[in-house]
Image (cartoon, rainbow, N blue to C red):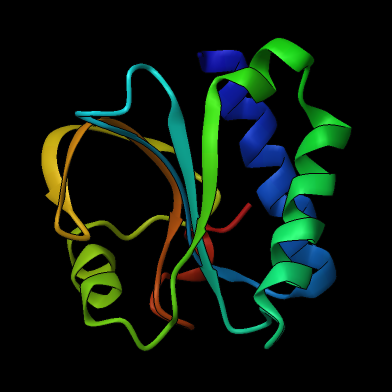
Length: 132
């Protein structure tokens, strides 16, 4: 799992440098997901066409992950930046390109068994010292 998280961290950093920062980029294992992880992301640069954003992120994932790693993913979930639940996650966890592990918590109204939060921040909310 450590290798997958590092690949996702590098991918998130690469996409951020090209398109702008994510306000959330995380991998969550829901309690009912049977070992399939959700990639959860939010960014101000997401296109108004959600399909275009999903296609872009899926293409980037396919370019970096092995077939076995891709099979561990269930879906990509896009979160609106105005979502109040996003702000709660950003208050609880403030990281930028630095994965942290979470377990047994409730995020976005869902019980999360396990998770890795790579970036969680409001624009400008994390000091530049934390950026890589």
